Image (tube, rainbow, N blue to C red; front, side, top):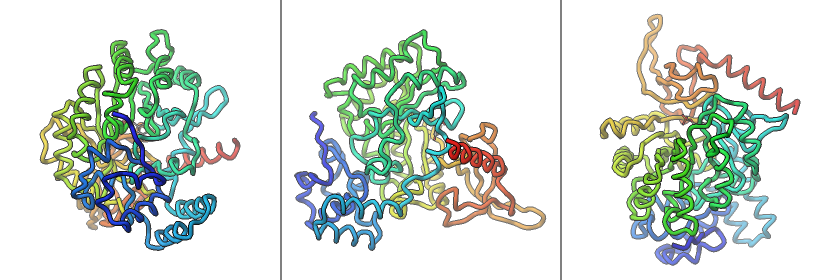
Length: 446
Ligand SMILES: *Cc1c(COP(=O)(O)O)cnc(C)c1O
């Protein structure tokens, strides 16, 4: 299958758009000039149900929706396009809208950039002891963009390639000095956008039995199975990828594909099922993850079916995330209480083999905070309704797996909205404050 991409400038050539009115097409164009917009022929031809596109989760996942912009921002962009302003003016207008949408959430960049040999390594994030995230410079785009993507700012050129590195040399050097790191997670963008020739160079040092790192698991964070399974079926270098994966697993390393699936519909095509089979045949494990997103998968039955189908296809449900506080948040976000209810209703429908999934989890500054549920607790005769929380991962490993309480708030949507219960601080607040101060001082001296 030949890959064909459609973006804001050429998407009108998609044949299926004849089902849409000119106004609907224009709306996509308007919003697609603010948020990243790219979709490909597999998504268009095999995933989207064009008879029902208005309610189709795959359509909403990939085509910008009018409601993603406020009325005011929508009108501003519409006018700019109607007036046919020049390219530079259009970018200024788009950027000014983007700047109001919290393009850089959760202090990722400032706090987790390590150093090696006296140099900052901007393509690495090392937040949790055992796992290093690596952003290879040639893996910073995707086969298709998700409308809710929390890294959207990078795809509209607001970040450049801040999170990116060209060389593995520094990575291998850093990991050699950090024997506590067992997992190397390739992320992006999507590392599976890389050609084999480029990808191979990043992987080979770790297959070498004489390498001085303690890497035992290579993880690939990718949406390729959902958006372009032909990567492993018909792309020119498909077999080379599978052979390299086999070589990785034969060398005694664990290869974990961290596959991003947002909806059970992404699992139905013969292409994705065959790609999953081939990856497993190469010895890879496939773990699955997704945020819970309004208008796309805010339905417990969808999650239960998705986890069940994933297990049937030989995959391991891993994470359910809370939608992040960025971009078209008002369109996609679900209050924490509702997110937890959906998780719980889905979890109770599946057997233990699907319950490897953990969540709902917020990836925020202190760690990965999991919502365990709600309760009412009495302290000194005063009863308070609370959220019960714990960290799945913590900036300090000692914070992990300790239950803690936040005041119940039916409108809370993210960690920032939560206040400690009983008027106290969260147990980690003082230490976190110190860590943030330290990071700030370091930034200033750099
Ligand atoms: C989620 C995450 C990881 C991986 O955590 P696991 O629990 O091992 O899957 C690593 N680094 C960062 C910054 C993360 O957000």
